[in-house]
Length: 133
Image 1 (cartoon, rainbow, N blue to C red):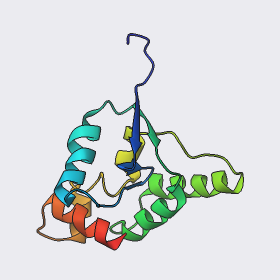
Image 2: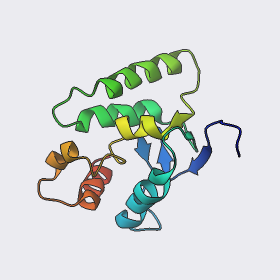
Image 3: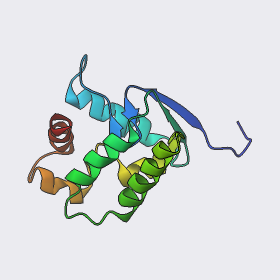
Image 4: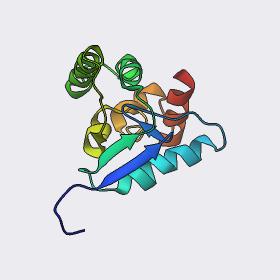
């Protein structure tokens, strides 16, 4: 729009802060594609507005599946989200850039995440994560 403001996306039940929706009416490949090839192609500074406030639970899961731990951005985000919840404040919006650092479902193609499912495709890693959640 020429304003220099970051764009906005409303993800409904497809993506949440630190997580993604359940697979009801699509395949794991469809949901992975929606996250990586559709939403993932938007500019990193895009503000992400999600359909539900599941941030703390999603980030607790993300920490539990983080290979080797040590994702400082993820740990800091979980701490902040807990503080926000205690203050009865929102954790939305996020940004796509932030989600690519903390959201295990968007990171399914990250080589670090492949330890979750050695030798698997990103869709397989995504599917295994979704089943674990």
